[in-house]
Image (cartoon, rainbow, N blue to C red):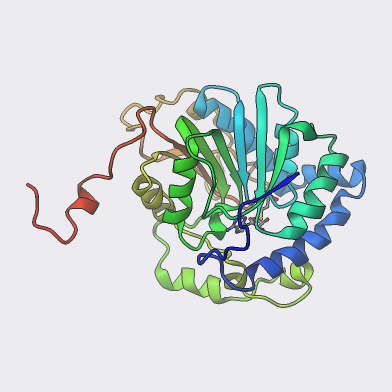
Length: 305
Ligand SMILES: C[S@@+](CC[C@H](N)C(=O)[O-])C[C@H]1O[C@@H](n2cnc3c(N)ncnc32)[C@H](O)[C@@H]1O
């Protein structure tokens, strides 16, 4: 059964034409899951390999295995939901995308070829800007999906609402450094995606597919404003340093680091440059969180101090 969370409604935060591009992409992806060998090649490709590593390593940060009820937003082929369904402590997975080709064709095929436990997976046709769950989820996973949001605050607020107190959102995403200026970011957004013909069968700009490279500060500002406790891990793409998993397994290892500021995490193989540079771990506080602090509440009013 497939849940329909859109139910004929239009999400005002979805860019017109973006779903059609994803449908073209997902129609092409079907051949990557034609059989077990093809699927194994897809899962061991550089990009997916590192995304799988990030899922595994997120458990060090949380200090517990992925478990309970999970939502994958922007699931695409749903490879991650399929693999999560095989984890013993995971009971239920909502596997959601806004593209009907993904939900109706690609995800079921991937489940079959990866021998997923389909009894745990509920497919959802819906948008991450309108999540129909309240205080229900232990875990939300975004594998390269959040950066398609046209409004990170709206998307993250929906995720916050859907998580149980103490629940986690994990996202692995491309991101720019904070020092990147507006012009560079806009230029990329307006530029043609050089892989667009291979991906969509036609030329397309990054903006047509809502393909943002937000800056780290934009992710963190939206995260804090949505009331999350925020743990961003930035991969060092240029520093020639190898993985240091101690930073993950000992959350307080960085004496002098407040837990909510950036932890450098050098997990990437230098000879193997990869796409995502940000591992964003967000926790809904056990007490449900509090309103955002002075920065927002002072706006438009006299200083409280
Ligand atoms: C870069 S793909 C990642 C797909 C998949 N997570 C993976 O790892 O291969 C981004 C996915 O997000 C989906 N998406 C984009 N905006 C969305 C929205 N507002 N609601 C739900 N899914 C969305 C797209 O259809 C696409 O499948």
